Image (cartoon, rainbow, N blue to C red):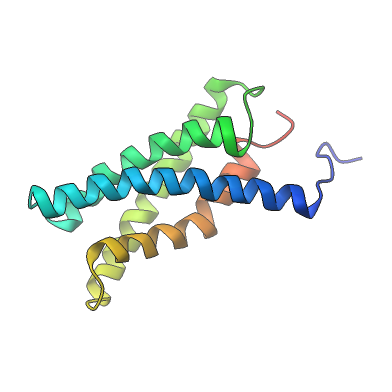
Length: 139
């Protein structure tokens, strides 16, 4: 018998929906910092991306642990270590994806290019890592 309980499709859909809500909050923080750096402080988009991503990652951890995956029963230290390691990879993927896209998509403002890159990385890497490794059930 598997150590993981079988989940209904509806349960999985609700969890993914909660992840989108948390991601929306993290994106709002990210977007606010990025836009402020680019538009108000006149920092180059490629340099403004890093602090914006780091702030969004903080929101992601708190929201993912408490709301998306409801993983308060797991060891905070274990989750935090795994999250930091995975976010380092996610950060690198987000930054690299943004660098790739910003050089190839000239018809969109940098904020929209940022959203596109972050969305791609979220669906293909960040959410699966959080679900299957960091905040997995049982712990």
